Length: 423
Image (cartoon, rainbow, N blue to C red; front, side):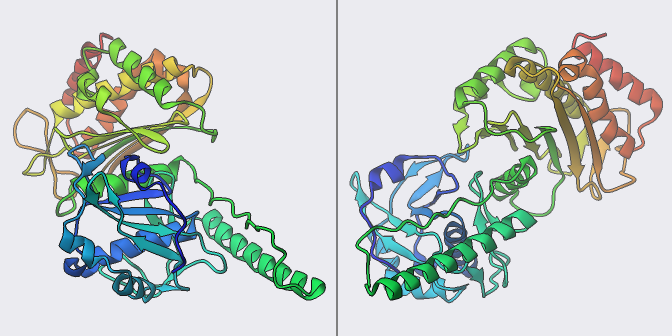
């Protein structure tokens, strides 16, 4: 572990936005943490080191909406437990080569925190050499994503970037040695900055995967319940283009245009509570098991646990959700100024093996397959001109898996159109 530079600890503790450079954990004692709890800290530190460095703050918990706003700090006992002489060796027994980090316990506004400061690798990337309770996997390179997830590097581009950075580091070190030999000097007296670009941010698919992981860790407490996802992404990858204010304004306009169906997808009362994350507006609903994210590329991701405690999916709930989602998406794209651009809308609900579907006409239906999924790519204007068409397709995708009779399907389609004012 290297000597730490000066930091603005108050700004770091109160930033309140997790990102590819910052993560928060609730107050805890290192001495009483489970093996999985310690492994989770190791995973975050390794991911920071393999990306572009960062900070892990212990003593800031999440509120019911998933926002790191509970700045409780640490008790005296908890603070003492984060002793660098004990914590450091444990962490670096799990990783090769050792991570370059410091662990400090600053006092901020009268409360004590433990803060890890991690530097990006200067030689070879860090690989996990010890598997622990599913939180750490041997032989894995962890990276930090823009959506504040610490996950394995699994894409070819991510692994290639790690290798390229390692090669650049080796060339830089060799060049420094050669300069020392040629000029017979141990130091040029100049500061040298290793040009390490951050790892590729990945496409919308990576953002959606990270979003799902974020949701599961905060809302799935046990078992393997059905998870419903609705995602929308530009068919052509685009750089970040919208500000948080623009996204919030487009969402508000879309909600206003579909007042009769909006609350079933996005409750207007929730909009002011949305959290400004690194690359998205995020809302982890504290009244229902669902989460929304509006990404700055124009992409959208919605995740929900739609089944009740008995694993039953209600047709009426799905009908309202499909109408609200389709209506919102059409107005949202239109407000953002999209027209001829192609967007891909994806819907999935899985696993369905142990769930039932209540169509309201008798005994619940059982699924014939384990997943309901649909995907289609259309012009942005198509989503705003005929939203009822996509609402019906979302509903039918699920209803057909449960083999609802055609008569019931037709009745539900008519109900969707009536609800959206399209009958």
